[in-house]
Length: 392
Image (cartoon, helix red, strand yellow):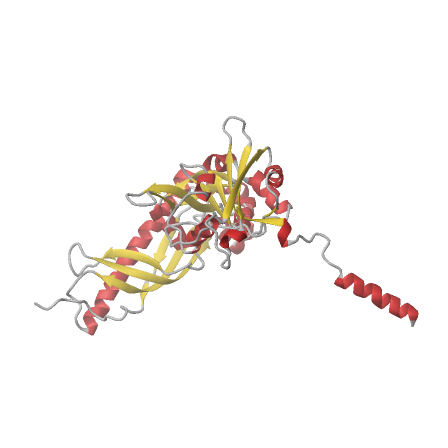
């Protein structure tokens, strides 16, 4: 009886004991965002961490102080500079709630595997954190600039930009970037952040548009918004929100129609034949509705409306196909990087063929033939069936 009691007591102590590496909330400094630059003179990493100051966001005792603190440290490695930050503030940095990592374009051109090595070896940075590249400005400037933000915390603002982005901007998280970098069958495209001047306050704002193309782990170049949309037509599995597409109206000259794309289904299908080793078919099936028509006449009855929608679907299909071909040709000719996953689909469907070309895939990809099939479906015209025309 006594022995059983002792064993039960020991087992209870084991299960109710606290975690050995626990950290109290009063002892840690929550990091919401990170910016990674490099000193051009010393070659050292310059890491800027955005620490939250919860007291400044209190609803009971509001404070005019900024709800965040910017801490910059330099060093030879990322882990070193992350630990150095603990020597400059009164809290130990806690990076598990980090939302976005901004990397300067010069650092990205050198290769960011050394940066991600520390993230994957340690448990500080989680896989869902967004990765962006800063173009024509320092990465740290994007964490400490007054922009069109409702949130007082810049990290929340940047996360909101990415979460609400449309097809004209690329986005990727740490986990997917790491997987695509290590694999041979697809190269990553990260979000692209820059500063844009305006004629009104705050006069400078942050812009998320286009994409940063990598070959393996090195930055090769950039996609503009149209090219980024072409990229997303092929690769986007789930829309962050409804996307817009504007095409000519056809009812009246110089009038436009805007479509809201609600769903997107896309796939890449490899074909292996005797004459040509392999080719690819890109099939894209957007589904949406008509959101705005500038024309004021021309679609008055049901048949005219259906014919009008059919014509608009063809115009949309033509425009989407042009954007897809534009970005695929640029990836083949300029970047020599398979950012779409052609190799991945070839590996899945024809592993024996893939094994023969895997080592030189990026070179082979530049010559790969492909065709594009687009099928746009417009379900309705919103609350208005025809066009609107003011009575004289």
